[in-house]
Image (cartoon, rainbow over all chains, first blue to last red; front, side, top):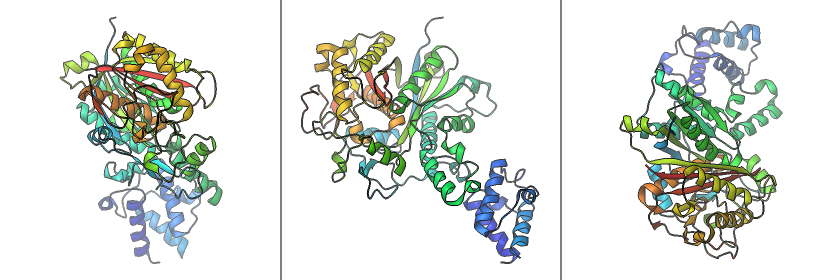
Amino acid sequence: MDRAEIESKLVDLLVDELGLERDKITPEARFEEDLEVDSLGVVELLMALEDNFDVKIPDDEAEKITTVGEAVSVVEAKLS
Amino acid sequence: MSQRRVVVTGLGTVNPLGRTVDELWKNVVDGVNGVGVITQFDPTGFGARIAAEVKDWDAEAYIPRKDARRLDRNAQFFWVATQQALADAGIAYAEDDPAAERAGVVAGSGIGGIITMQETVDVLRQRGPDRVSPVAITKIISNMAGGVISIDFHLYGPNTTAVTACAASANAIGDAAEIIRRNDADVMVAGGTEAGICELAVASFTQAKALSTRNDDPASASRPFDLDRDGFVMGEGAAALILEERDHALARGATIHAEVLGYGMSADGYHITLPRPGGGGAARAMQHALEDASLDRSEIDYINAHGTSTQANDSTETFAIKTVFGDGAYSLPVSSTKSMTGHLLGGAGALEGVISILAIRDGIVPPTMNYATPDPDCDLDYVPNEAREAQVRYVMSNSFGFGGHNVSLVFGPG
């Protein structure tokens, strides 16, 4: 899966499972400040990433994910 | 301080007979059946395979996905019912409105997010503890239906939840009225909800021999006071009433649907499921409600009974009514709308409160449907099978919960 595919799938996840607004989701968008994802939502997001991409994201890496683009990068790294 | 009076200025509901108050009432008056074969899960192999469901429920038609997905079904029902009720009352608080501190919520539910609980146990057992959702617990706890109301509708006054089983939302209405009476709030959302039609609850209630197993004829299964009744039919849904201090309502020109006049309670202190033989506890609750309302028993025009369609409740409640009302019981219409809506458990008291208020508004006594064969132990006028026009000023509504929780409410005209 290339980066573009990962990003596309991630955006779908954010819309379908977390109920975020599609047009607000950009690579630079910050989950908490821009997308109004609260602390519980961040956990849900990470679990959804793990389930949907079949990867494991340990806590120390999870803590560093603050934007959409960073989430894509982490998944991309785990899949390569 | 002279007694503060509590009136009802808004109504809202989502239940097996309707997604609005108007739809509910039309169907109640028309004797429409809300019971069918269970669709929320495959009931094959279950002793009871029928229920009164809110069919094709789509929470996102009312609540944005982001919020709807964090609510168990029971909380979704209560959210929508409350939204309707507040709109009906013409009440809305901005996030920073100081008056919002004088507006609160008392909700009621038998078991809150049991559907989420069942799903979460499956995740836990099949995939392990670290796959459990971070919002599972918030969806499961019974207070959250009421808690979310304060968040989303900006109500910063007293906020509690009653969990007295089938009496829960009757307690909620009474407790909310008391909060207004003692001047801790001017406006209260009062009501309840239940969404328990899942394997766990249906299996458990079946094993307790509480449910009708008339699976071959669901529409006739809920038959309160009938000789051949064999248990209650589970229902789901929610109802919300906006209670308001009377002068506060009058000052803003609100439409007043009814007044909450009496709230009576008692405990049977007898058994976890069976009512005390002779119905002494229920009788005391009814008596207290009359005294609280300062009404003579002869002034009650209609009783919306608890009337679950169990052998035990219906005969015991009949005896209790006769104890309280004496010979007057024989000229007092008593009906159970559970014959149409099923038993909404923690939501029943509120739904039946709404129905009682509409009976007053329109002067129509709702029927007990499926009434075919009289039971010698149940010999009152149950308004069989057809609604009736009548003078309806004062209505008593009964709700009795497993554990022996007895609540009786009295409503009067607005």
